[in-house]
Image 1 (tube, helix red, strand yellow):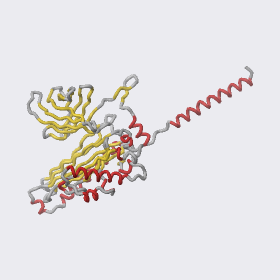
Image 2 (image 1 turned 45 degrees about the vertical axis):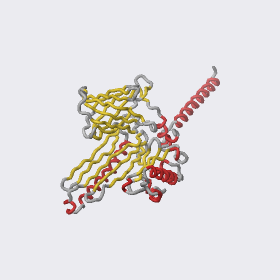
Image 3 (image 1 turned 120 degrees about the vertical axis):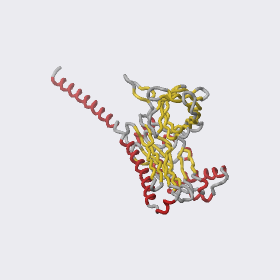
Image 4 (image 1 turned 60 degrees about the vertical axis):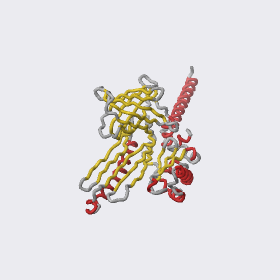
Length: 392
């Protein structure tokens, strides 16, 4: 090959290499890090699998999370994995914290048998009851009797599933604030959720946010107790404050929790109750506003209000008309202050109306579930609840 031909061949090889490099760079640019919306879509679409040794994947453990009680012992938290008719898992009492292992079965007639074992492997009790699946939302309820292995010390248990769907080893644990002040005659019994495990930074932001909200409520109550007059301390009755919570939904990208607070101030005619919700974007590490789930410019308050008013009137007729139409129309009108307590569920948006808002105190708090089918035209398809609309 002469020098001219050799030079031309070299130029062709160089050009080919340049094209290969350019294509690789272009392809890499297209695979840039996803933004928060792309991350949310990935979270919602990702199959629940986990890596196994030597490559490939296997279905992730399908854990179900529960809360409930055995007899008068409240604050029970349980997790169960069901494969066919076999059950494995554990539970613990929040006040104690010691985990108790579980093994059992569910037969074709939904009869449940769960045997419990302590850390040494000794059987300490047995659950016998029913495994019931709600036909509307698919949530599981367990109910029956707990006894010692010999059948003694019988107690009724009632346990319900929580909508917790984390794909990783994250759990929700209840933290407590308890106080009994004999001098000022008040008690505090508060329980709030925290995410436990290998918690990412944005999950930790949720923990801090919830803790701050609850601590503020407790401190405000303590302050009011310190400001009461000495005459009030002569009363035989004391004051108290309590907070509990319910998980409406918990996924890798969002969590929705309802806090129910109750308090009584000595000398008052009756106790007070209120609800507060925490809807939190776990991808971006910040609280969600109601407007965040709807398309920009959508008249979502008007849509929700119209549905809520109609449903509250229906509920009132079915319950001897304790709510007046005029009170419903005022308390459920499309005013932002009327829709501050809302939760995200699998079936729709849960709207809470505290006592007095849409009816008299005797009627108590009211609630409405607005199905996603009634909101599908205005919900952001790429927003935090867009995936649920597609399932309706």
